[in-house]
Length: 474
Image (cartoon, rainbow, N blue to C red; front, top):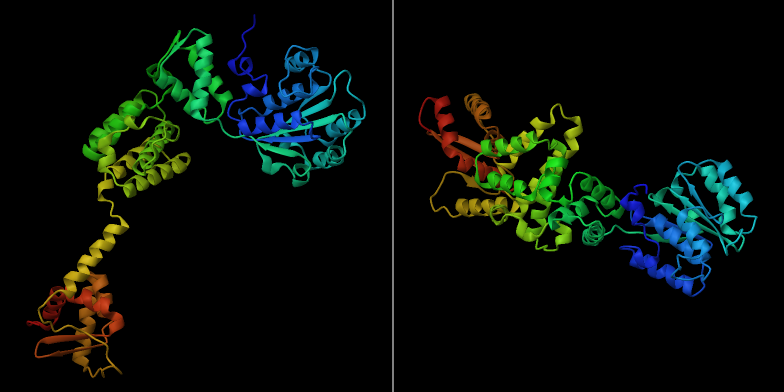
């Protein structure tokens, strides 16, 4: 007997076997039971979640010899023909291969003829979004007023490409991604029937990598079985497929928060030398920091975290704040976006690890605000009397500065600009100043209060520069 891939062998044959589409199943079965059968259905959703399978099951439910029924028997001539794909009254069309208006015109001619032996003539058009605009236009009138024995079932992964005029003439059903746990249960059922042993972590990884697509999960399972020799372990998957395990990521995380940079780089280099791609490593690292961010925010659901909470290092969770984890996730995602433009992906990764090692130097906005509050309290809490006055000056003071004093002021500003540009800028905001008896007095208006505070903080620098220019103490 010829080998059959798991995805085909496990294709659901009844509504009850559809996984993770409870709302779709309930609505379709109720409409069949109540005799409310539409002339056009539109199934949309991600790949591998059961759209085409649901279309075939609906076709069997409508044409079953015991129906229309919400539970087709699967044993009558009509059900068997639909299952085998050779029913004359259920026509499956690949929208990607038959995109032209001429293909649709053939359908328009065919619908005029009644079914050969079944109750309905059903057209299943997969990837309907691939049809051309003219093909859609040719289809409009047919699906709006079809003969009573015609049913159209459209399936698409890109609903936004289907014209609104088509969507408005169909009953729409949105298929959702299947949860990791549901995929894992189905994988467990499959390998049980094959008499193959599998670790729970290995099945969980396959289900997670399927990203909500049961078909992708089955395809990956077939690949893993081909090199497993009857026993599927996560260690075997990691070695053969170049996967970074949670233990390795935890080790790197611990080194990032408590070790030396050279240890981080050596550990990463050892993993990459085993055949793990830089891109895969970055993906796993981004997912790891994202999971830590979720845990830090109080999330505990395994379906969201990809791993049990206990798998993540408590040391890392305690060492990094929520803001630091957000920054780390942002940095890793930024690297992933830039990898395709990189001169050397490995260099980029090593540079990222160096930056992640300095996460403890990250200053959060809250810490900046707290530091400013302390600085303000320190400035205004001083008791000593100073010559620097920060006050509102009504009408201002006349600046009767002789040529010597003007030269002194310009030299002071230029000298400070070379050493401390911000201080020079603050000093230039002085409302008035005077130099008498080797005493420099500065006046600031209320609106320049902050500049006055900065100059006071740096008064030693100002007096030192002034003394250098005057060649005497100031």
